[in-house]
Length: 164
Image (cartoon, rainbow, N blue to C red; front, side, top):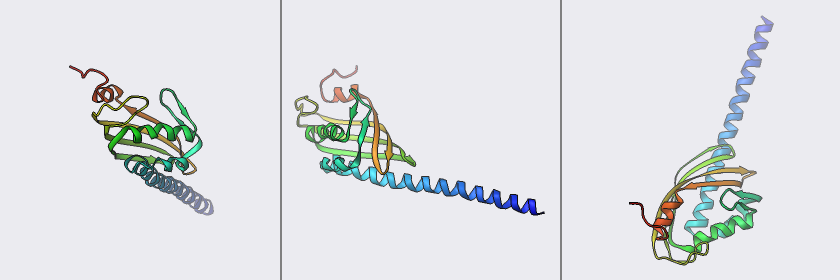
């Protein structure tokens, strides 16, 4: 009888510990979603990329070609979107989190009215969708990898012929 009681208590404690850990992970994910969403609202839609100075970890990595390392370089990368496009709209269509891991499905719209990564203004409008995989660390962005159709993006800019 005592063995059964002890086993019941141990089982209940282990179930509560798992639930507690899951709850902590869900709460952390929710905090990360709120923070991350706000960062991109301010940086791209409001054009205030200075928020990125504190949003990234010092050793942040953007998996792009070429790979971008460090928060100053990450900020400089996204500065191109703000200086290159007017009428910017960055829309987070859906975002999911599991603790410090996030997946963001997004849409970017804008008019190419400034220099963008060395490309002079074309005056063309773009409307592209993509997905970003994010890793957070201590409440900051540590790693990002974007996936979008760059060929469609370049076609919309008038830099490549449209598909027939």
